[in-house]
Length: 432
Ligand code: S3P
Image 1 (tube, rainbow, N blue to C red):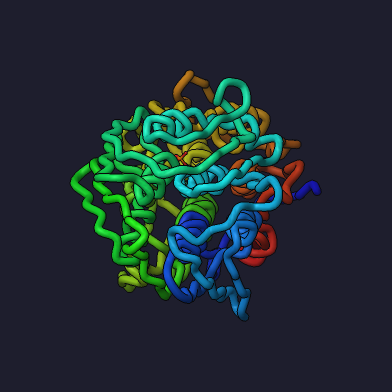
Image 2: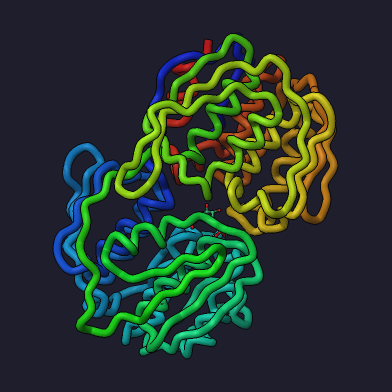
């Protein structure tokens, strides 16, 4: 499906964006490993978390979909999962394949994980190598580089591991595997990535110690179960980010986004965008199920100036890179984003995809191996652009379309369903 979008005169309204994708994945996985019934409210019914839900069902978990995004999960305990009868298809979801691999490495049966053509080109040596260090029997296609992944689970041993890249998927995979290990696993990351797994695991009663960039988790013997939990998932900051950028760069804009997760490991964009001159305010900050939540008010910026973003900031805005590139086209001066090589191994090469898209719309851009330089303020002009089947590229280019003269067509636009079903309807509802 192609999507056509015209230049906007303004952008106004009060909105809710979909529930958090990262937290939705983790809620289904941890509830499945818990003892008893968990209730997950405001679960994200989008393609990615549905892949996790289906995977956990194949492993024997009973999941019931109630009304209004509420699901109930009957946990099977850490040692109660069963061997799947078929290959588990994680579709487009990197979080599903990497986190579930950690669980399966410790479960005594055979399983195979695969995905769509994008996921089958994404690196998994980053989880296979440390899991092998823990004693796992795990292998992947092309000398352990890519999915499919085959696992024959067994009891693991604890390791002391320093991660080469800051990645919540690697960290969470190892934390989950550590539950099945003898002894204490120690994981250190170079910079802090999102910490939803650590927070949620603590709420199930597991002792998990976080000290700066280092995490310590004890293996849980068969007698030490995880407690079931009730959780309400906040709206996804990474989905809100598209609207924050839109309101900042479109004239005559004023929006309020309700109940958004503002976990500091996720909100690097807020600091950067404010430094660039945006007008964003957090209202009614509160705690919901162990995560900080707020309403986000945002209006057109009076004047935007370029920024320099480097390696240490990247993990806290990893998924906001495409939206930030759009923002940079409307800021006076040259915005440089470096230390962002990880963006090359997302659902698509997001550095390349954004540079090609923005160039097509008339922006002056330069690509580095680890980032970009974008010159603003650019007068964008509507064109045909390519999403590469990547939800965040499609949504970012849609925001660029709203400030581009004329009409822009985004191809393969339905990929937004991975994280944000209804994105275009929501966008059009705010645009005038
Ligand atoms: C995620 C972690 C990040 C992020 C992805 C979701 C998670 O990936 O880009 O969208 O839920 O743990 P990396 O861990 O590969 O950086």
